[in-house]
Image (spheres, one colour):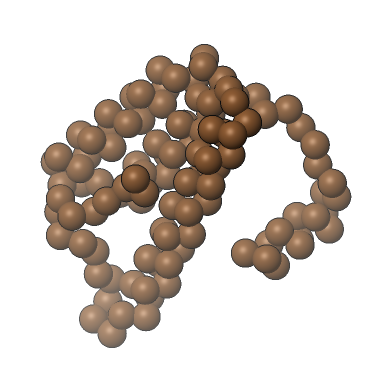
Length: 107
């Protein structure tokens, strides 16, 4: 992760942009939360569902403190997904996934 951040800094330098987030994205975040709940209930929850929900929750935040918390959750889910990819790649028996209904979100 540190190497990627260094590459971004080398390519783009210091970046300062507005957040572009806020309550106008709350409905999308709610839909993503429902999609996670539905997928989990049906035994088809994926990392894409989980990360998508976390990203949309971040998009729906106005305050800097809550946005920061949500972005940390986004980063944590992304790291956990990478760790799962690495674990599956190293498994002598091939890909291993949790049984349906046992996949969890970052909360």
